[in-house]
Length: 230
Length: 225
Image 1 (cartoon, rainbow over the protein chains, first blue to last red):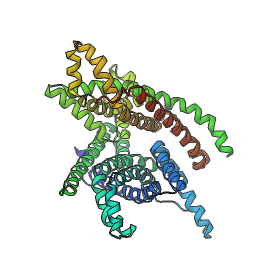
Image 2 (cartoon, rainbow over the protein chains, first blue to last red):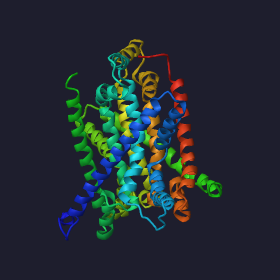
Image 3 (cartoon, rainbow over the protein chains, first blue to last red):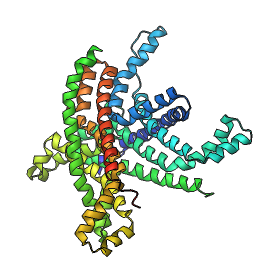
Image 4 (cartoon, rainbow over the protein chains, first blue to last red):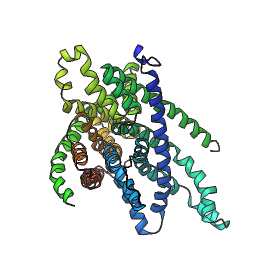
């Protein structure tokens, strides 16, 4: 247990901060995913064939290609893309893109593809009468989406959002290949310097189990809260 | 464009390993999944708990942790290195297959369990009423219905496993993702390589998708409810 001591002698504090990092990346990725999902859900539900196609492309590609490959694309392509844009604005020096941002964007885009399907399914399962009634009452589209459709949609989507969160949380372990010090990377460092990989990777597994367990409890609570009226 | 044409044969030959890993893991995973699904329905409390925690642990942790524990972790234990298990655990190839099998087994056990649980009691009673014995009831009645029930979910699991095999590249195997990473890191042209490797993955996803659709049609005996 000395290996987990807090402070300079053990790895307790490092692993604690690594866990916070995992949570931070996962939440950022989920939110990035939500923003993308809002955009692409509207694409998928729109009447324009081209927008439908773009929406389908997005969800098919990022749900069908391995997460690791997407991370490599962002990791190696990220700074290149940023430098390309910077060059247009007349900035020619090397720019290194932050590992946190790269990772959160890569996982966020994947997470968004799953969220898009969840949002679309939830909106489509809302009764048509709700849309018609809102229109008859003279609400503008923007307003009735915010006041009528989205609140109902969230309740329907919540169990699946919980699934997307679990997937996203587990996917963050893959960001360790870019060097961002989250749970997996920290365990790798600790395992390397103590020559005790079995202990540290098992401990990482326990940390992930703890995170998935706690988030499941939280989502169950939210679901209960949202289902009060039903 | 040149790089895309140049890297295509390399990536294509790496695809063989990806397909191999996927098929072997799915094949072994079915047996593991059925085994734990049966344990899960057992009336023995200990069997039930073993199956419950097996699927809970493997579904609650990232696949990467599982591979690392098996490949880097278990090799550290003295008695494992002296035992017969070492034949499996010393090679990254067999370690990856072991990790994938256990992972997909956990997800499949849940799929199979729910498929068997949702079989209508009336159907089984009818089979008994017609005088079928237990073995015939299982193979001729329960199993076809369970296969039909689990097909859509199992199709998803197959696609997840195909994507999961990309983690084999983290334990030095040169599968499709491993080779793609190697080419990217030597040429620093991620977009081109991503397009080629991604298309190969999408093609395989599409094949699995079509196969499942075909099987769903084959196992669609009217609407047996």
